Image (cartoon, rainbow, N blue to C red; front, side, top):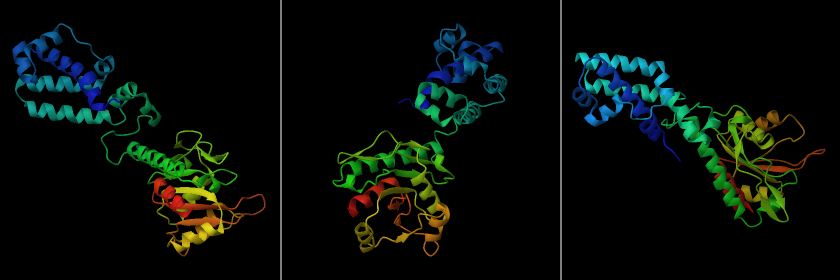
Length: 298
């Protein structure tokens, strides 16, 4: 695990400082004067001047970096810009380059797992899509551990398999829903998870969750299990809101219709139809809570 701050310190700042030191020296400042302005040692300035450090070509070639270096060099050399202003201007550029830009690209190179987000994230943003996506995946992993340790869960898995899903806060389609690829299956009495959760791999359970949200539900997690009247009765006994929907009609319309009177539904179910297996869908604020509800309803 490598933090973007390490990328800034190890890859960006040495090159940036060397460029600025080179610019200031070119304006006639002594090594001591440059060292004072940059807050570094004179020996460090000497190393920059003699090319004794590794410089990143990506930083050297970036026009925005080059423009800032020239502006800072001119202002600092003329005494028209304070060290504080130079620091703030540099920090602003760094934050900009971290947001799906040069530094984000260097971060992806240092940590390839980030590449799946296509650089479209701000690593420091508390509300970033990256953070929300990782939280959803972590919630599913917690839910899977709950189900794996729940005795008797395998018996609740329908013939088509179960899936545990969680969507992003502003989900529009199945690509915004994380799930288990290939579904959870009952293999010789054991719930078997074929792979790590990822986005865009569930159609049916994700579709039910999205339809419920379109009908007014705030649920972000869902888990489908074999329909059992006893399970539905236990859900009602425990105060959960239960609604039936028509399995043979249009899924979106049927689910939305079931939520017309009360969108805060906890369990949706359908009793089957021609070629359609009866299934119940447990909804919850997140995937881990959906797993807990199923565990407690066994």
